[in-house]
Length: 225
Image 1 (tube, rainbow, N blue to C red):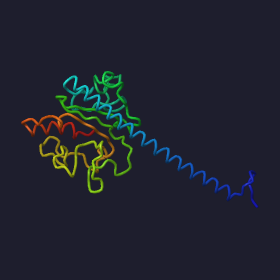
Image 2 (image 1 turned 90 degrees about the horizontal axis):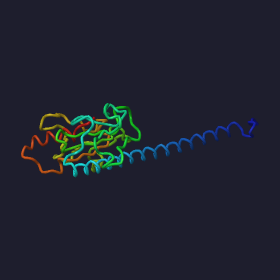
Image 3 (image 1 turned 180 degrees about the horizontal axis):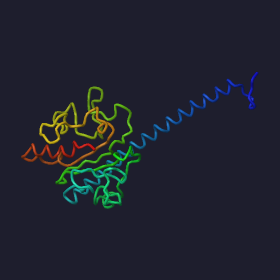
Image 4 (image 1 turned 90 degrees about the vertical axis):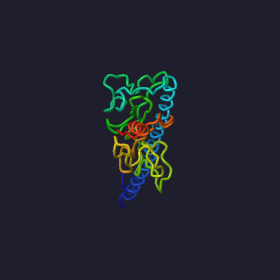
């Protein structure tokens, strides 16, 4: 009988190797899955912490904090295409840290330099949006808008779009001009793999000029990177 120097036959050794390979794969899969869930949970917690700090800033100052790149332009963490050359301290939201939050968080695992935590406001700084752009580690279909199979909107759905809500700000096509066709749909990777939160106008009294109100609101809430 053909035995190795360790006392195992060749078929026995092949079985042992196969078992070790299978166990290693299972351990890797479980560890990787846990890591993905942990990073996604961290992203959601970071966005909620930023939202709380941003709202507290507005209570004190009367408007939302500015992004380091100015209004209607994305401002983001260092190392992204949205960072601010003059802000080498990484303060992509100006004046928020350390008074309202200890430090501005950064994404636990970016997906290229066009991804990570980003922030934008309108010109009046009465509305804002914060995103974990293109880093939500989800298998297809990703973050869905509500439909027959996913009737409830994802709590971090990155755009205000809903088949079940005709009053949503970001419907398939804007009736108010400006943005034209809204990007937030099931085929768009920025929408499906990004987390988002926003605030401002939706909680304030609607002004007399409803069309202008909608246009200004769309500029922020419907904006994708």
